Length: 326
Image 1 (cartoon, rainbow, N blue to C red):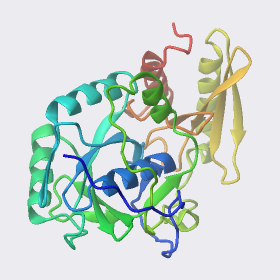
Image 2: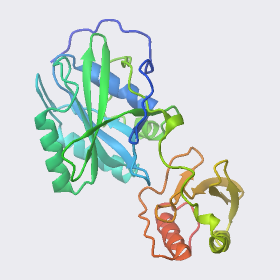
Image 3: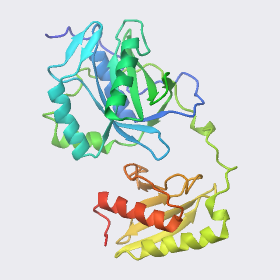
Image 4: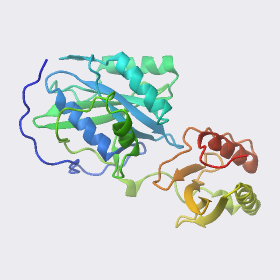
């Protein structure tokens, strides 16, 4: 059924950060382009529910990053108080996002349009918890969209296995270009349905105050304060330098945390970061765009830092074929 022509919208293309910054341990990171896409999907259906899926990954410290927002398929069901995704469409798109882009299904979204409900309904919460149990998810996101006049609005909620209550979490917006969206647009535009609304118009969102991140930073004894661990770090550097055409350059940031920059054939490719709680928590491998590439590699600390790191890095190489391995 054809929709009526939409009224002319504001030229605003980005979120208006009017609401105060939020201090919160938990938050969700999302690319600006994906937030704009979400806004346009919500505005496509102003009197009935719509929805889709969120694809991305969880970081080493269990923080979600939304890298792709999937909208409804052609055969999706849109009713005043119900949305049903086109399952065939979801399966086809998910296969590409998982196999080609190595993204995970980390959440769902749907709109309550003008129902006056900007939180999950009891039915929503029950379904999410039930599906998490069936699929074995430890955490899962649910985004609830609404329509407020000419604007869309969105709130993100975090569900955690074993906890009866979900948590609303603020947003952290990534302003870098989204290579995943560009890849899909370039190679699979005939399969993925874009939103029909011409422009996004998102209401102010609760934004994560990154300057007051309450993660513990200085009180934990960093692993390099142990003299023996400094020797282990040198052995890690020697191990990395043993790879053909690869060079490892160590640096220390302003917080005293060590980074190992990896150069392949003279070009910087990766940054290996050792966070404050290492080796209890995983090292993180970033590319030059600060994308965490090692989120799919499980860190297993055996009690031996060098042995655990070698195992971790070899698993990473298995996923990143660009790096020479032996």
